[in-house]
Image (cartoon, rainbow, N blue to C red; front, side, top):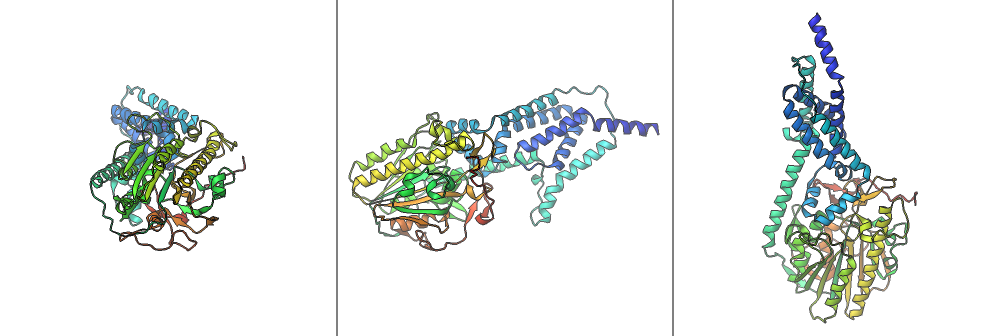
Length: 528
């Protein structure tokens, strides 16, 4: 009787000990930091694991909680902005140079780093815990903890099986295990994709061109960066920040939907022929133009890590002439302006050419952090400085398009120019002084981007409200340039108000998602 009472008292004291509370708090914070939905079940289960490990293997427990705390502290700002690791975030990591990396670090609010420091501090306290001098025997409370942690391990795999999936132990819902699995699996997928890019880089394109009837002498493709459609006045935004696009004679699409929510994946699906969901990097719009006898140019203000290790570089390197304003290997700190690209186009236009031309400009546009694009300048304060700078980047891009348009007109040759953005952004820390925009895949606004076609023979300012998908860009390109190929099937006239098939987008987990089922992330102007 006395022994039972003694065991009960010991168990109760262990359950309410300060260390139990610390482990539970740290489990909650680790769960939150790694970007997964907060789960009381797995926070309690991980607390049980830490308590049991302290009893049986204290050194291993210190190593585990130390590593988890360090990773959680470092990942917390990223987890709040971008969620848990996935294919697109790992792809972005592989495709990011030092300049972009440092910019990302400056965009998160200061208190995100403060929480990270707090998580790390709790980890240090846990690691410095001294071992109990008196070794206690196994009791009922330990058995309950062990049983609970084991049951929790199987909850998610069993749920997956019940919902028609496959039972896999690696699919456990423990955030720590999920994080490790997601990093390893998605990183392997990225490496496989890069290997596939490298192999295809030496493969000749398979285009079978059946006709070449260009209407214009010069074709220009301007690829914007991170521009939400509702941030541009010409496309329905609340601000008069795009005077050129708002008045120029041409065609504006007010319901164009990007293929994905990040640059590499979105443009990989947009600019290449896609077979079974996989981009065929050798068969892209540049190689199609090459095959049709066009002279091709690629001018970029985005960083280049290597020749074929990103979707964009793989496409760009197929052009006859390629120039990057900066290189991730040795010019990563060079924050060049998009306008510098106009010097390159001016050089091209200075020499008369008989071949039809395709010129591609890839902008930094509105890439986070926007204030770095504007030098901290903005026209009107809206909620936060970063949001205000973001709106002003639209004006800068509009001004570049205006100057490029004038260059084209001054050549005396017929021309047509298309401008679109790769993807949109989502608001983070909404309504706060530190509000900013970052990549996401949960909202329609992450995929709502501007699309505009301007030609030398346009007579009116035209708006097309019919929905169009970036997945159909090659169809547009074929119709636009007059290059027809066996591999491109035209389903509908792109530049028209005719209804197109339903639009699907690719999320960060590489899943096809119905665009109509996505949530909304409106541009709130109440605090204007």
